Length: 265
Image (tube, rainbow, N blue to C red):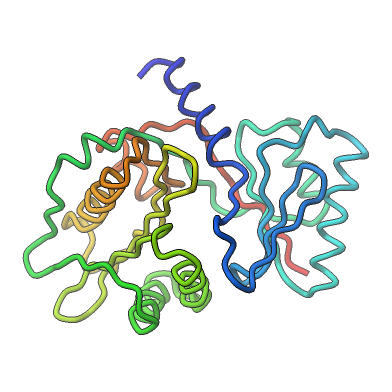
């Protein structure tokens, strides 16, 4: 993979996937614009700020844009995530966000790769584990319970957030669980952003006692086959440091990093 290829993939990511706006917009979700910034409310426990780029804003104008978000979410009594990519301009944006009260959380690596090689492989989970597509509220609650066991924090927002997306358009997202003896041991979902060549992978948390058995890889391969059936040619993942090495071995390449900067009133 040459530097030119990486830049081409990053350009595709910027031009096709950003800003990250749900399409269709689920019921109860609001999408607002503030200059180049897109503000999404009602899809998660807090708000989400996304953009293609900041339109060349710098200095005082940029500080004022950031301050307006702080004021709005302080008034709402809600947290908000500003999704910052490593290659975003201006280069002092992280400093300006921190100065306004945003706190950086764990950085992830944006990896992208072709669908076809993964779709050609059979998704083979370990013995005793089966993969199943789900839509019911009960199954979404089981996913949240699994994630809460993994992360030791409230994941109830996954239930109503995923339910909203499924209700809005069940063809825009597919949720897959890995089950063993009736227990959800891992889960992931794939989104199919409209008018793009991409499928994007999310989730992938696995109970500790079930790790290193090929479940995550099987979930990736299963979702790649779904993407291939939908005519998508590229997979994109915001990868944690646990999943990045696996995804790179599967042929995805790093194109940038992303860090959630979170403001909490």
